[in-house]
Amino acid sequence: MVRGGVFCVEGQWDRDLERRGSVLPTLELLERLRLVRYIHRDVATPEELDYYLSRWSLKQYSDYHVGFFAMHGDPGKFWLTDRRSVDLAHVADQLAGKCEGKRLYFGACSAMRSSKAALQEFLTTTGAALVCGYTRAVDWVESAAFETVLLDVLANGARVDSAEQRFGSARWAALAYSLGFRIVYADGRTWRPTPTKG
Image 1 (spheres, rainbow, N blue to C red):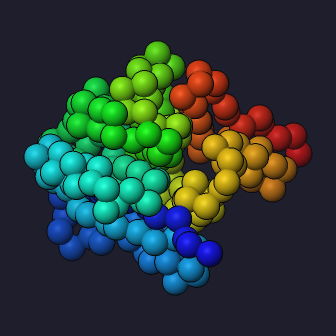
Image 2: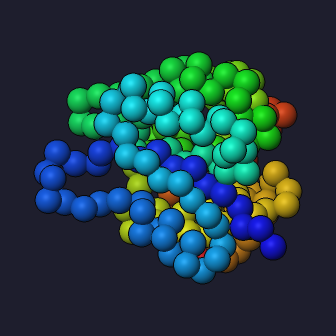
């Protein structure tokens, strides 16, 4: 079985160069478990981000069909560093028509709090099948645990709604809900987990 591919661009989380926060250990774990293959690149400027997004769209990387944006975020915006950001429209322009059927994950706090219209426009411009991520600020450890399952589902789930199926289950819904997880599909549907009682 061919493992799904994840292409990850990661912003610089902190000005303190001695801190080592990164999503790389999560990707390494998934690769060691033989669940995904990955490409990981650090980006600190819009030009670096643009360069790696253009490389990802090359035919030789076509089986890396999950795009993972690991950065600080605000509604409709990604922070590459504490001083440099790009908005959703900029990323959409870079990926215009290059994401046919791909699944995009915004591992960026609050980035999915953008309007449905803005996210739908992003999907229309890029051609991606879905975009998902968080509508609120999230805890690093909780989101890392969630990402371990999410990236496997996005990379290897046969159906476009595989993440919805997994995180709508009683086992995962509470965590997905507490993180403010949201999925917007190219067909216009939006999904959020239902709060669980207990």
